[in-house]
Image (tube, rainbow, N blue to C red; front, side, top):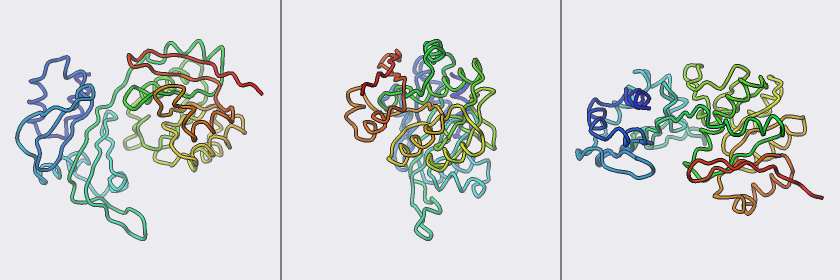
Length: 293
């Protein structure tokens, strides 16, 4: 973990690493984000709580230099990601940006005058999905992973893709819309998703799922965070073609999941057979969904 943390800070001023080194090893291992805002001291988020890293306020030129280093001195070549408000760093770390949006022909064409940065430290937990493997082998069927934000949905989904692709050699296509599952940089996945996995980065789910169906002949399609009616429609269409899904959804528990219209509609379509609930202590609860006419 500390090596990954050092890697994530490689495009930051040396002062960040020096101040981070003053934290205890336990604190460093629990760092989730660095929050940088012009005119304010930098903060580090440890287990969901922000704390000041050091007292000196940040300047616009410091944030601009960090972005320049994060793009490898090639801001123009990274313009597509920049206009979407983030950069993928080596190791799968993600640098989020806020600033002034520039529109062209009704669409966002650029992001300038950067005012805030958010470095999210990539988390990889090999074996997180281990308790699910036997169940999915004996009860194959689409999987919906559910938990509140920050409890490990994406981390679990990533390891589940790796495990199923490696152990069972199931053909899995990943629609990595937000480029967080594989975090491809220059076409190279920063996270290993297994030998039988194909990755489509940056495509919205509706178009990406259709593209994967046409081109990759997947047995499974993996998507992170079902958030819109268009996502649901795309999943329904693909499921009618015999494809199984690995997906995640935001909800505190099963009751809240069913109470939200978008998820209620999805579950009523009987697409998912297996429901995985992540508890606060990262314990996994596996439930086979039983549908009755």
